[in-house]
Image (cartoon, rainbow, N blue to C red; front, side, top):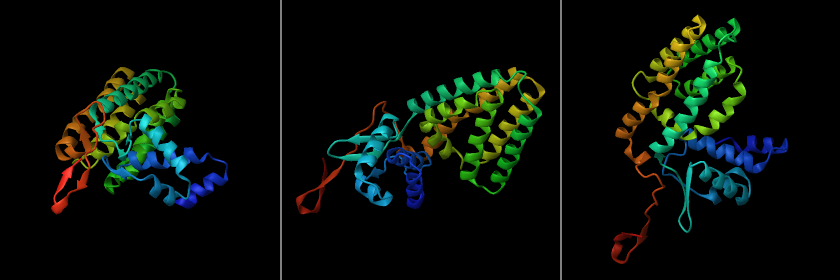
Length: 252
């Protein structure tokens, strides 16, 4: 989470406390700092951030609306497990907007645009060489945002970014897969080369294939970490244990 002093500094500049808390919690969930299934304590978070429980509670309600946390009265709040239906919905939105933007790049792409994209590719290769997954993820975001900006639709990127929170958790889990970052850089490079050549049809095909890679990745990740996923369309209510006489326990 953002350091407390950073949050206080942002508040001193007039930013809304609830918005800041929401952004900090969302970042922790999407980055997997808070893993799926983790219990969240309003009291602990309020104390850590130096705020009252009200903005924490309001932020958790917003996160529940996004499907990132599940709130159970009398039981508590938990980071939601990844549901493949949510990943598919996020992917649908992302693919629709990014591919539509790329098709509008005809006649708009400049030498500066290509140079900027190639600079991002070089930075991604360096992050891959250092096995810097967090740095690579940030550069991947920059690449796709810049790709949308090439077509004049850069202002639509925040919409994509907001919609794909569930997708981003799966994407982060996929990065440790063998040679995954190298593979992604290669796909990015193919898209840029086709864009530079003016072959938008093949660039669109390459972008589509690239974006849909997440579906095969999810199957691999689920096989390794089934505890992070849910088969249910609706949240699965956690089961809690209560103490029982004689030292044994039963589920409530």
